[in-house]
Image (cartoon, rainbow, N blue to C red):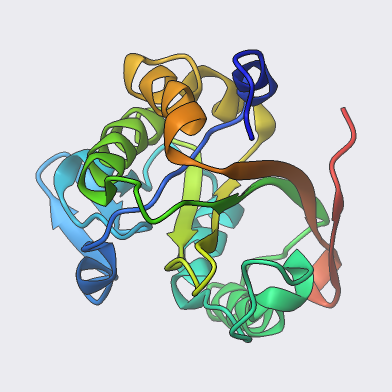
Length: 219
């Protein structure tokens, strides 16, 4: 069970919940145009406050955001499985390589920041309220401009689930964790979750996108 001091562990970590109707919206994933520039749907929420503005990103960040459109779990126990083995990262990096080659882009080694939120919710949790909290905090996170992907699943028969964010860099996640929506989500962990854990990971993609790795983040 969470204690009152546990929410301090979430400071500087962009935190995600889950929305019961989000997977229907996820079917709309793709690119869209707006009068102020080009945007990409990178979460289960397809409305304007949740869209990624591609203009401030550099070419490698834009390419990865587009490749992450195909991110999906590869096994039913993704909520508890090792993170790198739980998703189709090989397919994502292959898609990224194809996109880079089509743009004749010379990819140099770089890394990205991943946050993983594993949780267990009891049957008494109000999922409507949980979804509302999630949407508010996600809209705040989107303002940072560096949230390249947000994905979450559905709780299994034991209430266990996983949510994950892929960020351009750690510095983008920090301001996203101090807004009122995010603070409300942090407070909700005490009453809405029976347990939760946070993982911070480093996603490194090598020269020419010939190799990749996901390992522990080190400050």
